[in-house]
Image 1 (tube, protein in one colour):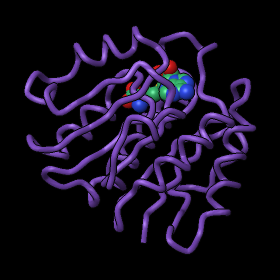
Image 2: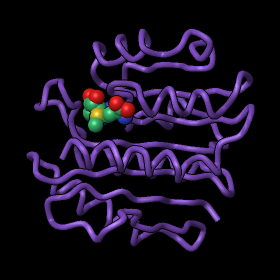
Image 3: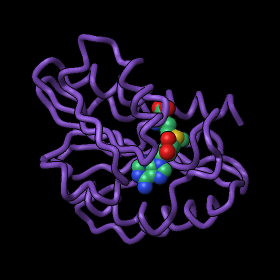
Length: 186
Ligand SMILES: C[S@@+](CC[C@H](N)C(=O)[O-])C[C@H]1O[C@@H](n2cnc3c(N)ncnc32)[C@H](O)[C@@H]1O
């Protein structure tokens, strides 16, 4: 599980990279340990902007401390659920990353959930620029995880022709493996 998390995280970064540009805007919808946050902040350059959401203040505090000093001024951290994205973020966005589930090494009872994730996915995709990209890494095997993962795929299938989506896993995922989705605005 842990190894899969790491390689799918790397795959997500590779998928997002073509959409990142100097002075761009991006969202880390689930800051957690801050790995995706640092990646996005590096990718938007000194004139760029990244919003990071998490419901755990402790995670945000630690992510802020881990962030290289030169990246801090381009990052706005919000102690709020990503379902509030629409109230805080203005587009057009180049990139959005969701890494769902619970924080490894943290409180496994605090997880994302299908209902609020759907609200956030809608708000994020509607703000993507043409060519903008979004990744969603969804996990099964924890309470609510199967339902959330199923909901994410069903949501992808309902996307309009303004978006392309694909499952990026290198091997077809089994019922218990995480799923990495890429959504791109055409
Ligand atoms: C798998 S971790 C994210 C890992 C992170 N991207 C990284 O690079 O370390 C999932 C995170 O989602 C957060 N979370 C749970 N519900 C949320 C919500 N409604 N909005 C934003 N974050 C949420 C959890 O607190 C947890 O830190």
